[in-house]
Length: 190
Image (tube, helix red, strand yellow):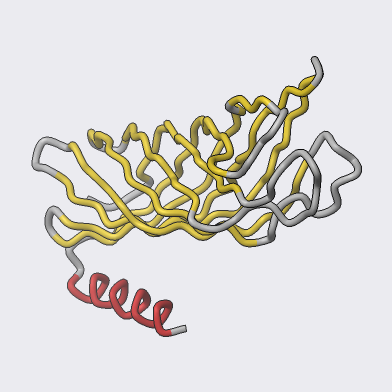
């Protein structure tokens, strides 16, 4: 509660200085895999997915805070005994990135992300509730903004345990790891 209040006060302060508030749309490709955990006889590979949604950017000079609201997929591809299964998780994510932008349009960003699971599509029907409902991550990225168009890349390192089950072959103590590459389109503002 205190962190949410602090974030709202920071955003309100940035708004009151009126340096620049912009909104936009963004989307792109996710390359995800599970990190950590003990996957005994299971080989895991990256799973290709997507992210899409919108953002607000509260700028004060070269510094800005950018909260986003995205639909984003995560997961991995498991291969075991010659069979391949996709374990796909879909989240509503809320990243809040602190951005530092150069005069030339390049930026670096970092910040937390919270994800709320809205669906899971797992190959193994014997696992009920494969993933927890809440996912916490820390993100860092870089990009380039030229006028209304932008391109960026971000890595999201999971902080919270994903698995919410008991199974013999897979230890549920693993986290999401996601590389996002995407484009953005600014809708208004300076």
